[in-house]
Structure formats: structure tokens, C-alpha cells
Length: 299
Image (cartoon, rainbow, N blue to C red; front, side, top):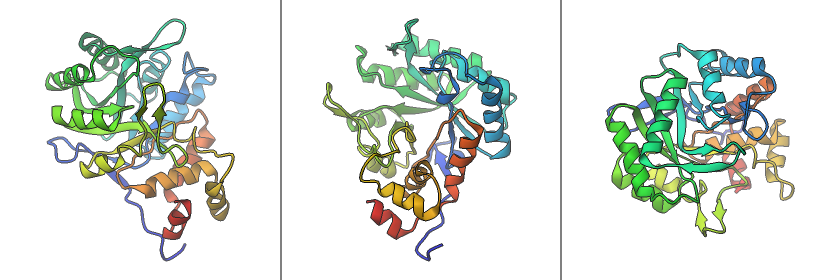
């Protein structure tokens, strides 16, 4: 290992400077890939899906799991409860609300205050919890409900004790800034990877990627949780990430995760997979110590 490599911080705190901070390891697990095709229905190999959850938590020590009741529908929540309940005391389950699925499998907004309450109650029931440690409000682009109305409803549910920490997902910088004026924003979950640093929604002319909010997250000590990180990590040209992968004899996906971990101590990757082998490979990325020269080369 080069002398310029530095040891990564192995933990991150959610809810920094609150009465209920939560400390988790810096590689979590995202469950979306445990569903069937189109993020719908049961997994192709249900036993392997259950074993992935058990291995992640009981063998690898992962203590942050990301889910949503509209994965499946409700497939990942039920798998989590079947595999892991009763939960270890240090396990943080993060879910998302703000969307739902129609019978045609389309994604639609479900973000009116009464709908958010319905989603929270459904998550509590299927996850077998009395309080959810962290809930992201997912912003749907074609919603007719003002963002401010939805986020105020989230903080009301927090006051009622149904939610411990409130986070945001798929937000612009302006929405994050507005959210911070309404209450404590514990986390932000936006699309982010080495090759997908910004996310421009052309028909809305809005940026909703990780790069747009990272500095604000760092300033406020808010973990940034990248989603779709591995999906967007495999380039077809200008393959600097491939060169670093070759240097360390690892996969491009592993270097993408290592880059995220080195990019900022406030980034919490949650790589998802439906393969036990890939679960092990993803988690090994935490052992890759990139040098300052590596990071400079990657840019």
C-alpha cells in the first residue's frame, strides 16, 4: 500500500447533534434488487434473497438496510422481517415514502399528508416495528403536492413518534435548503456514483444528483446516501476507473464504491445485489485504500 493511502473512517453518524444519534458502518445494503423483474414481485431465488440479508447482517456486520414498501410491492419489507426479526439492537432499517405502484407497475406520487401516514403505518406493520429509525421522503417529479406540505407532514409524524429521523430523497439543493428550515434533516439519498455525479432532469430543468448537495450535506453533517451507484458505475469510454481497478486487481464496481468512500467521510454507500457472491465483493470495497494519487487521477 502506498504511504499516501489513508485509513477510511469505518463509521458514520445519522442524526448528528440530535438527542438520538445513530452510528452505522459506512457500507450499508440496499434491498431493491431483491425483488422480481421491474422491481416487482417475489425474487427469482427467494432462499438466496433471505440468505443475503442474513449474511449481510449476521456475518458481515452490516447494520444499515435501505428498503421501501413500494419495492415489490412490500416484498423487501417482508423479506427483511422474515430473515432478521427480531432485529439486532444496532440494526437501522431505513425506508422511503412518497411513492406507490399502480397495477400496471408504474410509479406515481403518494405524498399527501394522509397518504404519507398510510405508508408509514404500512411500513411499521410489515417491518414489525413500533418506530422507524429513518424515513426518507422521496420526491416524485410529477407530484401536484407542494414539497413544503409533504415535508411538514413528515415532521408531524416524527412528533407523533412514528419516525425517529427524517431524511430526503431525490431532492434539489433548493429543496434540501427548504427542508433544513422545517426541521432536522438526518440524511439525503440522491443518485450518485463516479460517473453519475449530477442528475439533470431535463424536462424540469432541475439537478437532483449527489454533487449538487454534497457540500451542503458536509456543512450540516448529513450523510449522503447514493442510490443506483453500481448501475451507473460501468463506463464505456474514458475508463479511468477501469485503470484503477486493474491496478488493484478488483472490479470497477468495487473501485466505484471505494471512490465514494474516499470522496467524503459523509457518504454512506448502500450497494444492492441479488447475488451472495456480489454481496461479498461489494462489501470488500471497504478494504480498498485509494491513494491521494489515485483520487487525483480519477478527478
